[in-house]
Length: 548
Image (tube, rainbow, N blue to C red):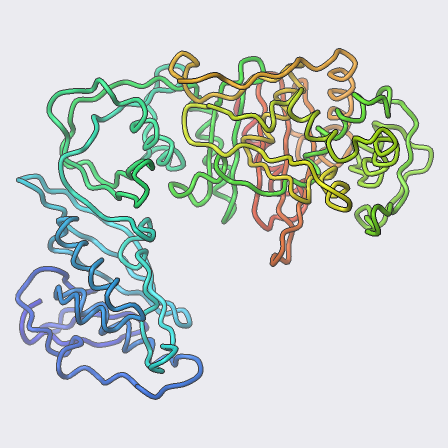
């Protein structure tokens, strides 16, 4: 930044004004600025005796001074403007030194309360290789607990949104060869075209790039604190030797999955081919971060009733779709009363009726006869493992979190029958539910050819003939004349589905869950705070199934 350039705050956006021409942003880590007017000696002093919420003036001044100190490369000064000076200063120095960031410009936007967003455009330069890195981040100004000063709430994501605690931005020779990931038909899969695949491709590279010897590439990456976790590549400045890695993904289904989840702030979906267990798509919103679709662990709500129904069939509590059953408006178990949605009940109903309308009390009434056998606390987990492979260790080819269906007691057992309590699953798990029912047997999901996976795959017993036929019948009823009918109305073919909504502590709205199949494609989705499964999650699954 040249001498004589002054700062101003215009319309909520910081600008630089020189000779009547406006330049948005602060030049960072370069130029010949002495910092005059930018958090230097003439910066407005911070209020050391403040109290209460930070004011708009404090947000403007603190963010301006912090960004200016960062801009001129004064890590210590910038650190003192945060609530963790030592950590901030160290991270700021590392951003420049290990990240090899040069000639960057930060452009602040209008504050929203105490939060100030900004964009960064920087040049990464390493041994003759250069490339631009552009991204958006934000900072939040808070009141210091002991000092009372307005300070930046320090976290690594202030520097880059993908930085987490202990992670480091680095530029240098890549530690592994590059990969070219291919879909099932040989089409290239890139994070640029399919943003949700960024963490998937990073893991594939970590596991399968061996043998790509030769000239190493030059990259900028985020190195996590966990040595076993994959690096997150941000930029490739120079390509090294590339190895082709085959996957089971389908580029067309993947594209549909990306579009479907993008409609929601926090959504995940996985698609699986029932006949083989091959994963056709995985997508998350927001894209490129934590792979919630495969690594998440949350209560799946009434999608779990697919397993509970199988348990009831296994123990002879129902005989088939037309078996007469009870669906009262409430059931009490171990002193806790459970209700149906809006306290509905079904008089003279059948198994199919209770499943398609997702009657909670019908499934919980299994507790009595199972208690007489002494298995009410263990039956669900046993059926889940025996026929659906849930509870086993899945080796799918990348990192994933296995479903948890533990033995429980009392009210937690009742809650587990409808997918609450201690039961945890993710989009991959619930997609596999539908895939197993459609195929009549569990095929452990994989994202690379089975020959590439080290270790044994989880297996399970085929569904008995009557169990498979009955589950397909009741899931078909849910998809055509039940809670899933609206979402599945535009889906053709041999289809079935189950909706779910799961209450989460601290959330005003339930998570929306949905699992369904059509012909040889199954999918599972969760939309955080999406409400009923018949809504957002159902729309996501239907969009993916229509891409088959």
